[in-house]
Length: 308
View (cartoon, rainbow, N blue to C red):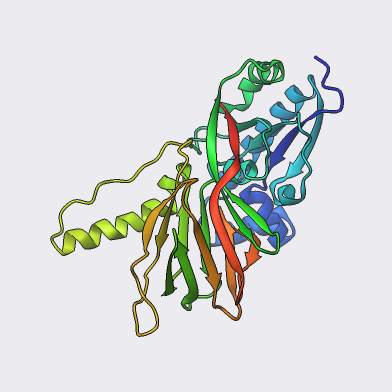
C-alpha cells in the first residue's frame, strides 16, 4: 500500500517517569524522592515500560504502510496536518480529545497503551490492534464516530475549537466581568466563568456543575433534577454560568441554555486583565479575553472523526 506524500502521525506523551526525570535530572534521584515519600517507584517504572512497549509496537506497525512522524502532544497546536494523513493518539481520553480539535477531517485512532491501568470512551484500540486497523483505515474500510465540536472566534480573527468544553472567565480566582448576549437578550454579569460543553463534554465539566445543582435542589426540597446528556454528534452546545452574582449592576437570569445553529451567543469582556478563553483544559493554548473583546461561540463547521 503506497501512501505517497501522506503520512501516519503518531502523537505521544510523557510518562510520569519522564516527567520525574526532567524534574530531578536522573532516574536515581527520582527514585530516591519517590521512595523517600513512601510511594512505590516500581509502579512508575512499570507504567513507563508499558507505554514505551506500546509506542514501539504502534510505530513498527505503521512504518510498514507509510511514512511515520512521531510528535509530542505539546507541539500539536503548531502541527500542519496533510489532508490525507492518518493520526494515532497514544494516551488517555483527554489527550485524544485535545488532538482531535486540531484536525480537519483526518481520521483519528485512539490507542490505549496500558489497558490494565487506563480506560476511556475514546480509547477504542490497543497497540496490537494496529496491524488490523491501519490497513483498514488506509483502504477506507472502517467505522467512525462523528464528534461535534464547538468554535469560539473573536472579531480580530482568533479562533479556538473545543471537543469537550470551553471555559470563558478569568485566570485567577476573582470574579469575571462581561456582557452576555443570548438570542438578542443582553445581560451584564459577574460570575466564576462560563462553561460551554459539547455532547461529548456532557460527562466532563458540565456533569460537575450539574452535580452541585442537584445537591442544592435536593437540599431545598425541589425534587429530582433530570440528567442532561447528549450524543457525541448532537448539533447543540450547552452553556452554564458558574456562580453568577446578582447586584445593582449585574443580573443572573441568563445562566443556562442550548446553542444550536439557529442560536446566537456572544460575550463581551469587561476585564482589564487576566480574562481568558481556553478549551478542553488546555490553558497553554488560550485566547486573551480582555476589555472590549467580543467572542462569538457556536457549533464548528467541522467535526471530529474517531475510528471505532
